[in-house]
Image (tube, rainbow, N blue to C red; front, side):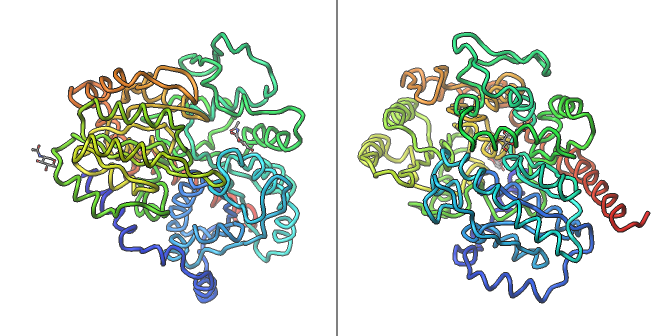
Length: 512
Ligand SMILES: *C1O[C@H](CO)[C@@H](O)[C@H](O)[C@H]1NC(C)=O
Ligand SMILES: *[C@@H]1O[C@H](CO)[C@@H](O)[C@H](O)[C@H]1NC(C)=O
């Protein structure tokens, strides 16, 4: 049973109080020294320090650890606490902690995208590239150095590092294969000026998709040819495609054609779709944004949901990075109010470095008007158990990849409101290719302000009518379950990856 599986899986967050997640660091080192390490090939795992990237890679690392790989994870000190749930399950995993390299555009102490917002991505990528030398030194003095480097796709520079060290690099994509295929076409041409009025098409990709300029991954618009930090990013992106292998948090039934395309584009078969990782046995420590201040307890939310009929509630959330502009907040509030549907709305209240504004006043007014019909959560919410409640009928989402995966896993209809980054690409996949989502906002761009009455109508239609998209969403959920079960496509992909790693180890140890 899909629903009970995920729910149970996520009891871990309830059982693990935050004090455990953030337990003193000596605990993990202490345990490490007393436990033998895994028996399989040694790999170095290097996550990119943003929650949406790190958590799925740590879920994957958990899968590799239960298959007995010997694992070292590289982090900087402030990111060490995020490893805790994983390290407590696998005391044999070693950590390699390097100080975060100084960068002129990053305030001291900033080591994670959450400390600075998405605008910090480029600087963090460029700062971390200074770890190349310390990693090389560590590697060259290690008695049995890693046979491969598994690093986030934002850390493309590690491809060059791996080449110098003479080991293969595997890129981990915390996003989908459709996005990876688009980046593979666009990145070598970064700096090209596109006419913003006509659509950009991709005739070499399956279904020859095309996008309005504003729907392309944000990197296309943000890129600055003259900025040396951007050169590191561009170079890294191109390097991704020449990686020895790549792993994506996706599955065949969702993106099989795109995975096949990537294999062709990369010229080999070491392209593994191993998702949804959140669904894999014993995945991580809970939902997308594990931890953080919240205005309500999960128990209260579940109790509220228990009072609602099956599939009647809309969950609304724009992810952990997004502070909605006030105008969008008002319109969304009006749309929810006028739709007449029950809803839970998780609202991010502040951003690092930003003054608190009067959004609390706006939310209070909406709460007064909708009364019992809506529950507004300020700050962070345990998204996975909420989505997996039987009362959940739809998920209005910005379409970040982890949210898409969590929506699919819960079998709920997605209502898409993409705003930036890869979100338009993901929304197109779900709405047009999969037919498992409904577009709620047709206006283009990050500041789009839809008409509240139209928004209300789309919301109420989506939840009240048994539309084909809902049926498709349920099917996709079953397909995702089938993919991660033994013999399913994602489970076989993991086996294939393990086999390749074993062969690498045999080659380095001279056994055959
Ligand atoms: C690979 O790496 C970069 C950063 O180094 C990332 O931003 C980009 O999206 C990736 N590109 C491809 C082609 O996968
Ligand atoms: C509601 O959903 C639960 C769990 O999926 C199911 O057992 C129950 O029969 C459903 N209730 C109704 C009224 O359909």
